[in-house]
Figure 1 (cartoon, rainbow, N blue to C red):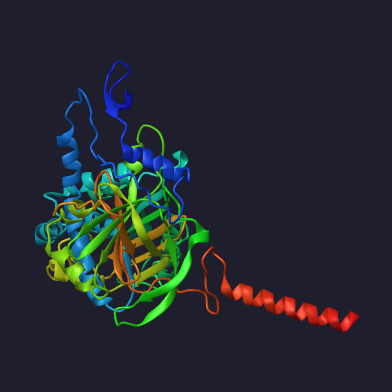
Figure 2 (figure 1 turned 180 degrees about the vertical axis):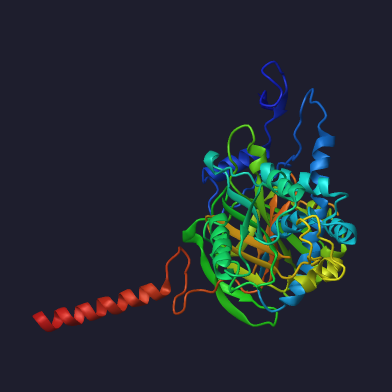
Length: 493
């Protein structure tokens, strides 16, 4: 048994040692490309997923707190998934629970009374201060950009725009700047709404690396007082990329039973897969950054695939009705051999300004009621007695998954059981609708979520064959060569 010394977190004098696991060895082999497509590893050695640490000081309480603070986010994510999937029953869905959570939390910083209490219940927090601490930790730890050290490229931004006639409350402005790292700016919604829209859209484009070019499609109502927004951008490369030459077209089955051709990424390498009653879970890790805080750059995409081709609705309902620990308890913990492995490439987008009805069903009532809404802590009293209430909540999200990794962005604006590790090789063939999550592994925070009902189809007139060859290109080349031979024959005939 091999051991290594670790002094990173315990000082140069520490003698802490941990066992080098077989799983880590397999990961290294996969990175070197030692396991080719279609090759099955026959080694049946049990994969131990626990780290054996000597003289380790207990940090369980701290880690548990970090998990617990994401339970509110997880609960909101699963409830939103259930509601939005029901409204998008025939189309793909992608959204950022973390973006929506952050925008609502920033709104709560200016709320009082029943409005504040409803926001706290929906977000799973006990106070405004606790919400601020949670989002600040999201921004500083979970969503810190790790791309300089080789990790995911992550951008996180909040913004508050208020009409010149409604000055921000000093305490709210300070909370927005210090706890939410939000920029605040006065604009003229009354006389120059077009300029205000350009300013906000430019902010959204910058915050999402131009993946979302605008969040407001038209002029805002001239009675708008405040717009609160949050934006998240994520780009991660797979820890073990898929080989493009192994991508091959095959049939994807829609919920109505019809099929169409889509490019499927294939692999014969070991994967993190867990098998449960009625569904399987795949975990694809993104490349982490290096250095002292590398563990905080650990993200993964988790695909929940129902066994039945029409089982998506039932799976989502089960998730929404379960505890917030459902995801964590069902994620795979060890690598397993695979027989057939197919995952479609997909690029999804979502644009919705009908979020208020969804949030009302989750319990936010007072915030959208002009008579009962209490957001007085956002702005200074102007003597008019004019109430402040949430109007539109706009959410836009984009995600692209391919052989190299994932690129995703989202903007939200408020106007106002046991794990199962199979011993035998398993199949994971995602040729029918499934659910996906982009998760921060250390905290459990859900950054993006959605459903894939129709992946990106194959190119019209072209079909990707085994080895990455494109059938349409071959036909075109044959036609070109035939024409060339005919032309040369006419010259030298």
